[in-house]
Image 1 (cartoon, rainbow, N blue to C red):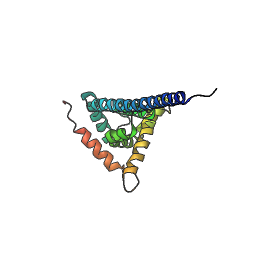
Image 2: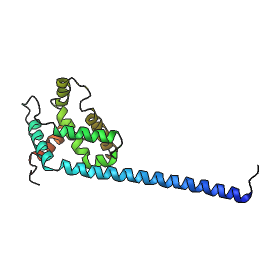
Image 3: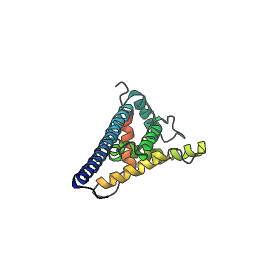
Image 4: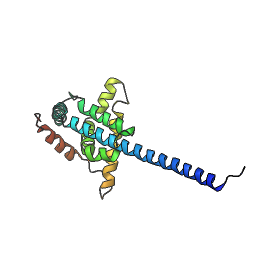
Length: 177
């Protein structure tokens, strides 16, 4: 069965149209995912800067700077970063955007929660759950990798002094915003 020229052109045009529609749909879906990620990230930033988390950040900074304590009294901040890590790890949030918005907070809080006392390790032992805060840990690694990529030295500049400076800044957070 031979196709005449008009039928062949019509078939080719139809397949071209189908291909174009699929490409446009793919592009629109990708753009929608990016917009959803950005919207979610802005909402998370608002939450991070809101009164409840500001108070929790201030309390955690006080605990971490007071090296005489055996455990931290608030878990809201690491739980927030665990959520951020979970969403990023599963692709709901754009990783480079997460780095731009939260990278420094993630790496410095993670460092402070692990050094000189490993509060995250203590929590894992206390609850008998080695996977506790694993997405926060994963996010820290990803943020440090992104730091290194953006620095000319190729390494993350996270340090004890940088972390302590961030914590001292957190102590001065106004709570009535």
